[in-house]
Image 1 (cartoon, rainbow, N blue to C red):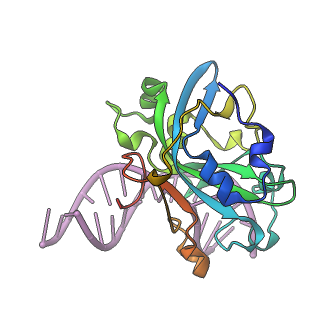
Image 2: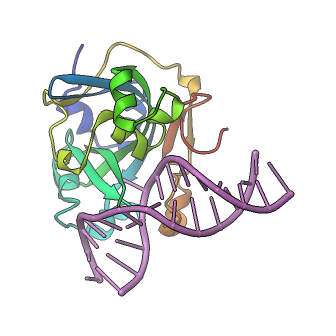
Image 3: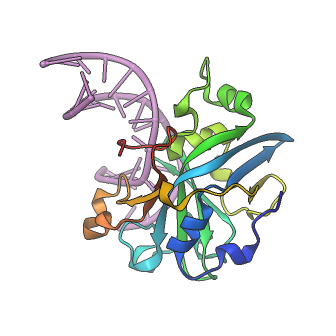
Length: 201
DNA sequence: GAGTAGATCCTCT
DNA sequence: GAGGATCTACTCA
């Protein structure tokens, strides 16, 4: 199963990279335990001109440093003191574009995910929403700034292809503080997929 | 089904 | 010292 090359992430158009990530497999393999899911929802954060981005205005701190790395690395941070949010860094070095992975359709290791989340039975909330999917895949902030071609964490193309008509764009979720940029249609999701977060459309 | 409060802690000001 | 790229449970209807 081919792991996506760095050239996939280092393209200039973060919206195009986001569109191409849809349907790909996000895989973790901590301590030889494999869990994976197919990406069905994500959001693009378009660099220093995007008020919703942590890198708005060129802000650069120890936390968001991975966003300034060359594409193909992870950026994980803690939100609301509880949730670990997983991002894919794109574009060339010094251009802090990123894509927040918001939902997965579980593929491998469902039982392991269920144990991590502590649910008696698997249900669609297992990998719906960025906080939930990180928990299910065992991703925490310590996994920030890892290569997406490492043995423990990678994104692969298993040949699955989404039909273009299944995809839809919408404004991003939870970024009301971003003013007009909160209205940008930078969220991408698979229509009708039960793992997609937010209001049904 | 819709709306709201509370959890909880790291990061930056 | 404030607030956040969230989620769940609980209320009220």
